[in-house]
Length: 202
Image (cartoon, rainbow, N blue to C red; front, side, top):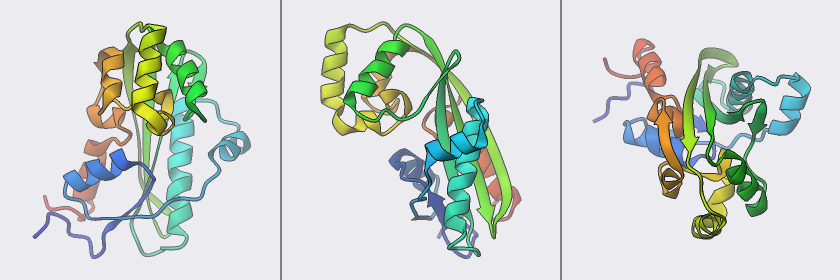
């Protein structure tokens, strides 16, 4: 028994464990397919600098990449960008880069933009970008060392070098915005669309 009315599971075009967990907890049956997308090349090609537009572009590209192989399926792409003033951050490439990002953000407020794109048969059915503002507390160098040691490889798995659902919550003194948007998926607008479209019970 399920609230899902679709004739096949939703296809999630994302490697994010947090997104998968959010959808499964909401009762959405999933099939996960990783999208083979060169994010930096797409950004350069589009010539777009606005963090919300970049997140939307990448979410759509991921959904499209997977939907090409599964034209009859409902495919969800998602992406998240981080903006601090005029600076925009991607996932850190290594621990040193993660440390640099955390040091730059400490004691300051930055914005997270989380985008989703729902595609079927190469047609964009629904898109949304949510934004949240987070203020990081000032932290010592010793704290950063310990934090990164405890976090391990996960430090490079999300923008900013933190996961708010884990140890990363200790980095912050204030969070303003939707919890799901912060975790990388504006879930409430997505569920609303799925209900209106007849994929979820109303």
